[in-house]
Each structure stands twice: as C-alpha cells, then as structure tokens.
Image (tube, rainbow, N blue to C red; front, side):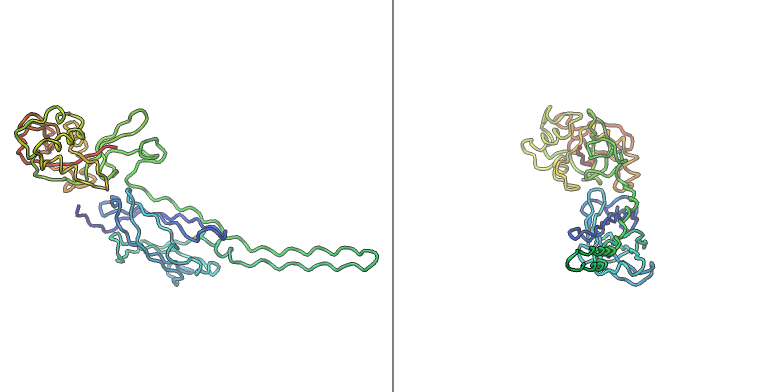
Length: 351
C-alpha cells in the first residue's frame, strides 16, 4: 500500500509512579497511531516520539526532554515508558505546575508533529516525596535525681513526615479503531472482531461462532496479483483433493503438490507473509463468495485501490483438467475459466 501517513492520532497517557525506592521512575504512555484515512498503522511500524516536560505553563521552560522510537503492535498501538532513556529525577516537582508536551513522527524519524500539551494534574510528585527529609526529633526529657527516682521526662514529639505526593490519575483511554468493545468473549482475547476490522495481518471479511469461540476469515490488505494464471500445469486434472468448495487451504496444498508444478495463484498466496503470518492460501469458491459479500465494507475501509477490484478473481477450487472456478466481483457471478487465463488473486487466512 502506498498511503500517506500524515497524522490522525488518538492517544492516551496513563500515569502511575510509586515513591518506593525500588519502583521504576517512569511514566507509561500509550497511543493508537492512525494514518490519514483514520486507520491504525500496521504492526511493526516504527514511530518517532518526543516528550517535553514544561514548567508552570504549556509554554513554560523545558525542564525535561526525551526522544525515542517505538514500534506499533498489530492493532497500531504503541506503549512507551517515559524515563526509559533519561532520568525523571532531574525534574523539581515541587517547583510549580508541570505540563507534558507530546510530539510524534509516524514515519519513525524526527520530523515531529506537535500533538499538544496537557497539564499533569495528579502527576509523579511522589518523586519529590521520595527525596524529602524526615522532620526533626523532639528533645529528650530530663533525668530524675539520684536516690528517689525522678519523674520520667516527657517523650519528645515525633517530627512531621514529609507529605506523600498524590498518585497519578489514569488518563482517558484513547479510542481503538480496529477492535470491538472490550469484555465480549471471543477467540481474540477478550474482544469481538467484526467484518471490516483490521486484524491478523489483513481485513476481516467473515466471522462466525463455534461453541462459544469466535472464528473468522481474513483477506490480505491488497491483491497478491491482478493477472496470474491458475497454474503452470494447465491440462492435467488434480482431482478431488483440489476441488473442495470450502476448504481453500487443502486445495492450495494439492495445487502446489501437483507433479510438474512450478508456479500458480495458490503458490503466490502460500508465499505471502502479510502481518508476519505464513498460513495464507488461495480461497476456495465459497470463501471467495464470503470476500465478495464483504466487498462494500472492505472497500470503504481500505479504499478502491487496495480494496477488491471490479474484476475476475481466482478461487482454488478446480473444475476439471483445464478449468478452475472464479468469481466476477462486479456482478458476484461465478463460472469455470481456463487455467491459462490471467485473473486477480487475493490471499486469505482463518483465525
């Protein structure tokens, strides 16, 4: 994909800092990084970060600076600990209010865009309390005269303990554009995946439930090819092992294993590793129909360039010795086509 990465970013800051001597003096920062189309960046994307702590106002003197590079996860989220590359101990938290300024370069460099400045209302002032001195100890009472024991002197009052800084409040969680609502049961770890979500290295085109566990079909984010032949072996029938209408993974394996095979639409899908996954395959006829049913949602989220084209797409379902099954996406109609024809190829995988 050739998408501009000019910034549309949703972010949140979660501050939790302890004054205990063994606690890490860091501020947890979490953000969802989105591209100009409002979609989260893909997993593994390097993002440049710049953090400034300002004194007294949002235009005040910089009392702390830190720059770093972090990498998005599969949902386009970055998690970074401010203070990992420099010490927050240089900040005098008792000297006026503090403001956090955040800058981001979604291309992973230092061409930062200022995302704004927010006051740290309940911040890691526990750092200040951690270094405060104990109050003075009260005087010892006078010792009584020898002989009859005199009255014990009054116990000196204990000096006041330095005030503990307030615990940082949790910031508002930024919107996660690619997941369902939190809390629903599903195979994806606590949230429901919907058609059109970016997930598992591609875009979800179909979902179903099996005994309380969610499953789905994922299509690659772009066409693998727009003019591939079904196979270089074009006059020999593979047979039932490559003719399933619903099991594209088995069909793909049978096509690649055919004697004399060197190249095919199935091999293009098997070699694809979008999102770091290696279990992609050429969809069977029914799976290709599932892709067509999600066409409108997919193209709305990916755009017409990266979405499905109004063209013929190969399925992995063989027809006979010379023909295989395909679907014309502009109409949704399917037919048999000669294996020598050049059609579009879209890889799929399941979760």
